[in-house]
Length: 77
Ligand SMILES: [Fe+2]
Image (cartoon, rainbow, N blue to C red; front, side, top):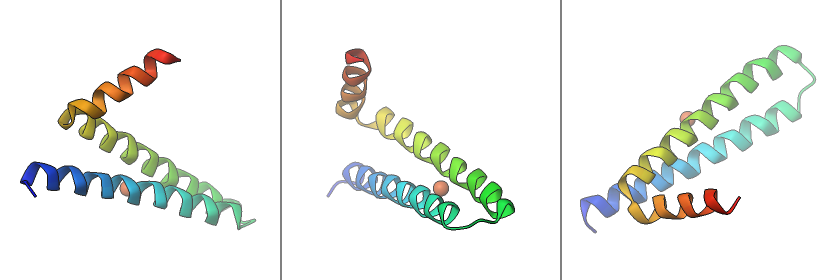
């Protein structure tokens, strides 16, 4: 596998990890009645959402096909 393909594959794995982190924090938030924990984890969860967006932006900049698909989806709305 080329370095470029390996880089993209690793970035997609990173993307998956960010989504799993978002779900895990949300699950923890939903499972507690402690407001301080909910507030702190909500902040962390939202940071993970930002990481997800940053990775999508990076993947789009490296993979023209992925970028085209996002543009196409955005135009259909
Ligand atoms: Fe993250």
